[in-house]
Length: 191
Length: 191
Image (cartoon, each protein chain N blue to C red):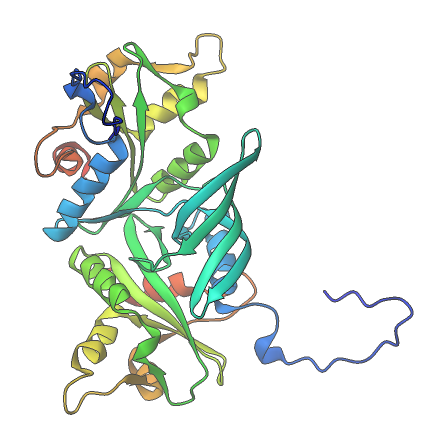
């Protein structure tokens, strides 16, 4: 909420509902909190891996990190458990109206999602097409199809929006939970 | 490795094989790497959560974190997938010969392990009794028994070594994998 200074002239803001409020990541985290508080699932975002180089102790029991660097994560951002099953996914946003570029996905994330799939975990992406404000759950198997063929003659460097419409699953955006992606898993992916 | 100054008299070190080499955490990480490389399971240690306060950019594309602090983790250290099932655990070491103190476990870890158990995940501790060099897989249900009664009149603040011998599962320490804790899960906990 923006707090205007009292004396300042109040002006009317144009609210763009498409971008209101939250980012995709915080929408997912809010959904996870809802799932956790209602005993539906335990899914957390992993902390960003950081290489700590120097730590100082300005006060007793208070370590202050004074030099550190971001490391490349070796996995996806989100994982957890739903009905005993292992859930693993990453979140991607695109401004494109026609396709999600494959460069939005890192090779190590592909490796990880393939390893998870081999172990019979439920692996996917949540993809936000911002121009349409649509959220899709894309099963990892479809991602692998495009990824593995991208360097071939007929391959392409992106997954078409049409593929999402036809083969991915639309996620309901609501109040609580904001992104009810577990409903898609219930309806289509729990085997 | 301690580097002695060249002129100092060299003395023979007594090697204590019980503590040779690795810590519990690195033994587990080496086991997880083995499992991963052999397509047996995908289990990773979560990064330590760090609150970043200040970042500078001394060079293009190179973010240097100049002020940050350790945060309390909200979950356990290890999770992943084995045969489709969700695995979640923490590692504890004790120098005691008689019991593992409950203060080695944080309340938020108990909360998390209970949430995981409700979702039918496989939750446990790996506990290293250093005086015996024995490693146990302690199912979370036994941990909860002791935790939930610790403040009662007959409660106690630790889990006796005898309980480990009778009700927990000894983990084989070997060459590859170093700590074959998935064998215990195969033999006793997969339902």
